[in-house]
Image (cartoon, rainbow, N blue to C red; front, side):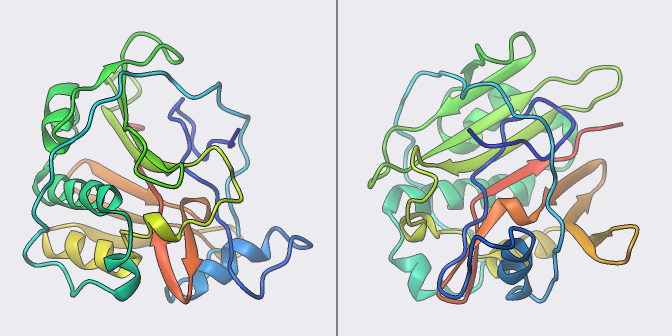
Length: 239
């Protein structure tokens, strides 16, 4: 079970894994090595209490979606990702290209963006909705999760690829390189900014648009053959 990297109950996406050259001796160096390939040195990952077991939701199959037209050219790794992973990434980018405020982060609109229906999130209870895809191949699935606003929180959203084996090769779901995410978001009004630590290192990358803030930490991606692949993305929901 993964540890969440936020102060809400959102389930965290898959932890970072490194390819060749990484060791398990220094866990702080693994995130740094991965995101150094992005031109950003993220030296610290969040350490929060473990999240409850994965929520259960009805499994349905989303329809295909055409890629966003102004995205960069697809990399060879991306082109070889599983078709379902590529479709999910396309849905995600299309949604983030059009969403303009946290008020749009409601179950109906989120589900419509992915061509699916979000159901009750039994693990988190009232005010939470979730969708879990069918198997994309090689044991990989993806999740879409939404949380309703509260007095201290805005509506929230999270997307992540998942596998029951934390050591599984993520190449089949390397469908969203960070460069593609960055180019798409900035082309649609999102502003990128680093989140510094007290000692001057970089804790995370944020993308902001109106009252929306997307957060990307070292735990949310992996490096595959020198390409930084995003496996998880979430909103920061505090008011």
